[in-house]
Amino acid sequence: MSEELSGIKERINKVDKDVFFSVLSHIGDKWSLVLLGILSYQPLRYTELAVRIPKISRRMLTVTLRQLERDGLVERQAHSGPQPWFEYALTDLGRTLIVPVKALADWALDNIDLIIENRDSYDAENTGS
Image 1 (cartoon, helix red, strand yellow):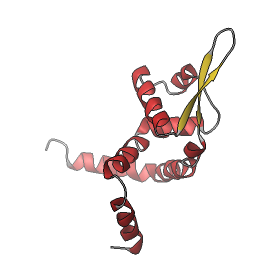
Image 2 (cartoon, rainbow, N blue to C red):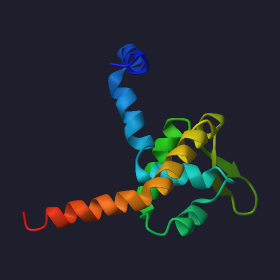
Image 3 (cartoon, rainbow, N blue to C red):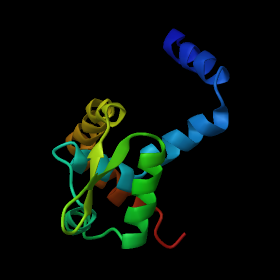
Image 4 (cartoon, rainbow, N blue to C red):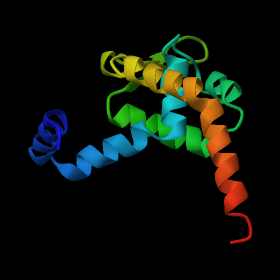
C-alpha cells in the first residue's frame, strides 16, 4: 500500500467512520455536485435552482439543499421586505469544495469519449447474458 493511502487509512481510523462515509456519500452524489457547481457562481433562490436543474425533482432539490446546509456547505439566507425571500449560497467551507468538484468535472469531460466507448463495448459483449 502506498504511503499516501496508508496515511488516509490512518486518518479515517481516527474519525467517526459513519460520519465520514455519509459525508462522502452525499457530497459525491450527482445533485450535490451540480448544486455546489451552480452555487459557486452566485447565490440563488430555490426557484432559480429548480429552473437551472430541470431534471431534479422539487423533493430531491429540497432534500439535497438540507443535507448541504446541515453539513455547513450551503446556507439559506433570509431577505426581508414586503415579501420576504430566501436564497442559497455557498459557505466558506462549501467554497473549499469547488476546486475538487471542478477537478472531477474536468476529469469526466476529458475522459467522456473513452467512457462512452467502454460502455458501448461492454454493452455489446454483455447483451442477452
